[in-house]
Amino acid sequence: MLSRGTGDKTMVSRHVPVIYGGTWSERNISIQSARSVIGWLEDAGIEPVPVRWDDDGWVICPVDDLEQIGEPVNPCDLLQSQVDSGIEEVFNSLHGGAGEDGTLAALLSSFKLAHTGAGVVGSAVSACKITFRQRLRGIGMQVAVGAVVHEEIWARRRGEVLSGVAKEVHYPCIVKDPMGGSSIGLKLVNDALELQEFIEILFKKTRLVLIEQRIIGRELSIACLGAGRGSLPQLLQPIEVVLNDEREIFDYEAKYTPGAAQEIHASLSPEEWMQIAQEIRQMHLELDLGTASRTDLILTDDGPVYLETNTVPGCTDRSILPIAAKLSGISGPELVKKLLEIAVANHLERWGRGPSAS
Image (tube, rainbow, N blue to C red; front, side, top):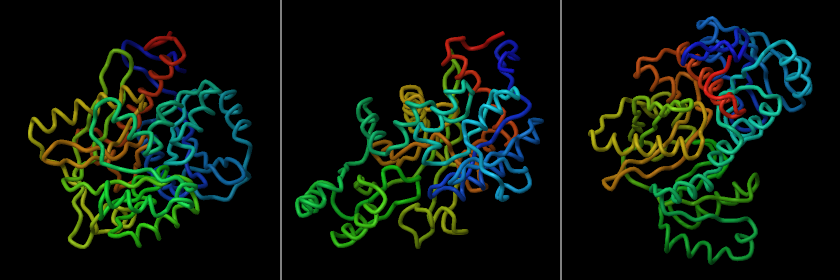
């Protein structure tokens, strides 16, 4: 079914598994995204096969009940059965965790399945906020002043760490779980006491903590669609996150509490948009971010300061990717078809068969 491309238009299979759920903090958001994706696939004439990632295996669910209790099966056995049935593409709706750190990409690649999201390397680089910062600095893009704290260093030299943060990063600062979602494991701290308390909380689930200088400016989120060989990634309309007067940062509560924040079309000067577009295209290509990315940044008087990127952007009614797509004239069904077409093109290129196959 990967061979049904004609001209420069690559078609996808009629049946497409949608993998969602997970056993980490973003499970509920993943389920919400999957509901949207499944509806859009149906509207696009593609039959979705909902596959939920649970603690003890994967469960195939009906499209109208994504949380149905079912018999879990071994992921490899399930994927082999899907391959045997002729399925060649998978839609990744797993946010964070194994869905974005390269684990799922490696598993699907071992079965030679085309998939949305990034490949193994692109996923691994972008999933960790620390690695992402390092790569961006390496290609000349601006990131916030920051510090990485290891659990062992914290236990032995806490005083030095606190002194260094006060001297180099300054308060207030943003403390992050490096592998957390864009709004999960995130806190604005105002002094050393708050910093210590939140670091101790994060060390219960991670060995590394990222501390960054708080950047003042306009908070933007830019969605970008990938491309096959010979094409450039397509940036969608820029989105600005506007917090209400009671909120200081766009954390999980602000993101999912009605009225706490607004996502609006960002008004940018031609010069601002040209710089952001050029840098995000470069980022998407050099970091190999796959079918789509959503990059968060703060626009300051000195230009954009990049925070992080996601390779499996959300598809809920509050998610940036579908909002930006709609502003760009792309409906939900058109969006999922585009993502699958890009996934197939990337897959064929990855396996050495060029931009199309017959």
